[in-house]
Length: 375
Image 1 (cartoon, rainbow, N blue to C red):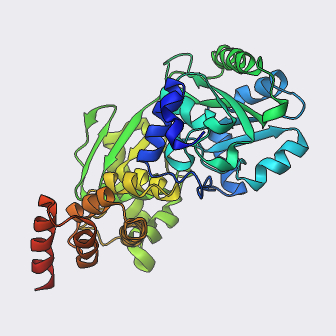
Image 2 (image 1 turned 180 degrees about the horizontal axis):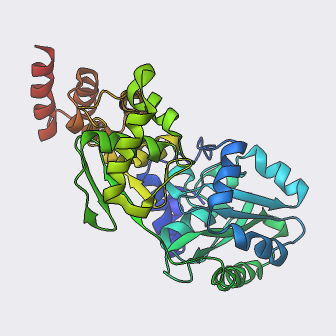
């Protein structure tokens, strides 16, 4: 399928191509980004709610000349199993564990489109936006938490075009339903949810209840969010105070913080027993996926700008530099504008001045800001 043939495509494919092209996926030169290494994939598997269902999926979907793939909700492949020959071919095109197959990363494909629509999808050959995958057919189906209905990921069967039987799509959908039934006894209702908004400010809530945090509270929470496996008092002292840090001071700070968090703050090691959402974590994830536009959308300012804690300073500098480099490299006007709204940067403004047409009202605004930045 070529772009001129879009009008003849199935509606689900037409809409997926439109989303993918809007995300600037290149049909000729794009490839799935490898986001996680083997050790990171192993850690993600162990913590993922679909892990208990993988043996069932493996047994149900074992077929010659195909591979079974299971992703998380962002399209990262956590499991890729099946025919050794097909796996070898798949690895050459980044259809492998640790890679990202969301639509905005690699264009129309069964896994990414199933995640985008929340429905089972089969993508045949030239329906893939990226031409590298025209020799493949893939069938994917979402898997949801049986208690909450929330999306957990997708299961997919992929194989060379000539080997895929038409009945595979129905089998994949049936396997997804079996997995959901299997998870009834393995997943407990979701626990606490902690939301941190620390870019350009200091706001947080626990299960929707606003938290009254000091700057030091926020620094502790940031350190724990960046180290979900936990930290000792000694490690926290080093991250928060540097070499002069005192574990006794840290324990006193944690005791005060526990008054607001209750049982969410665990000990030995100190860690958070909650689903943690953070704007700075969203930026990190988007950067690792190569999504400059999403990274800048979440980047609303520097991380805890008043903090002088070593762990915050390091993360603040890393995030700002990575977002800046990403938007400059991609040359995406929307991403550049978003970044320019969060920080005054002459090079970013110069790039926008070059990219925006002279008749665009934003060109005059950017030019005015650039003159002030250079004064």
